Image 1: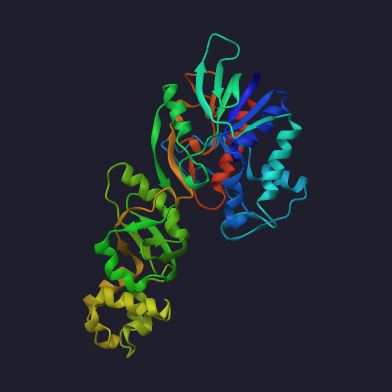
Image 2: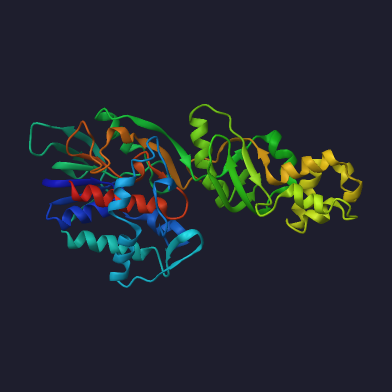
Length: 404
């Protein structure tokens, strides 16, 4: 069977691209190895899909080329996607940090995309594994796909296979293998937006703190990024939104072979040194003072960890200046060295992917292989937590749909 465009991957980016190409009158086939489409959309945002963010710009993305995403994001914006929801009267709401969610269900987004594909006459081949791709650059149908459902030819091939995160719903490295088949470089994939593990020797003294949730600001040596959200201490290490956010930057440093520590500001609204100085002559015990700003159990256990048992029973007026300076430094910059991540099973997305230097930012087409496009998470563009990765899917898919 002959098509103008074949999209591999019924992902958010893949369905957007297929719908856009179909809208232009192209004969489109959407192929996916899974029977059920849109699982990543369905499970996101607690089932309500954090479909975009009010504030989206290149600064919200990580890539070897941080400017690559600029063109696509400018041509299909969050407002453009919101307009599609409004046109279908899909109710949505805004949460903190500009995050936008469906009021009812992520299924509303899946239905929107499926209907857009139907309007464009897109054909589907689900439960269809691609076994081999043949390149025939001298022919009008430059690509031939040998699949479990037979042989399909096309002039333009779009790869929207996603990354390696959440393997339990079918993630695979197939998109990277396609890139390598055609000689395109791939930035080594790593888990991103992922909880961080701590080594046993670091974790053991922190065991009494497990389960504590804190409003904190995270930072990573070698990066100017800062994230103010919750931090959760677990029996395996560190989690919570502020940790997931900074984990991508920690992974970037690890990719370059750097052992990088995290800094956690436990009092992000306070200068801890000035605050302690105000209470320099107080008869309050240290844990009791810290409990004014931190969870009580955490304050006691953490204080013992940082300044030692001998100071816990002393009022502030009897604690030396050097010990208070140590405490202040740790309050505004508690340093921990992660040993790794909890892997793709716990990661929201994948960092790395098809190198952006090999692609056109205006069309998402491979510079050396006419007709071959890569979109969405398979590309080395990774957004922050909060709807940014879905917006990249919409924007990159929309762009490829205009040029395939």
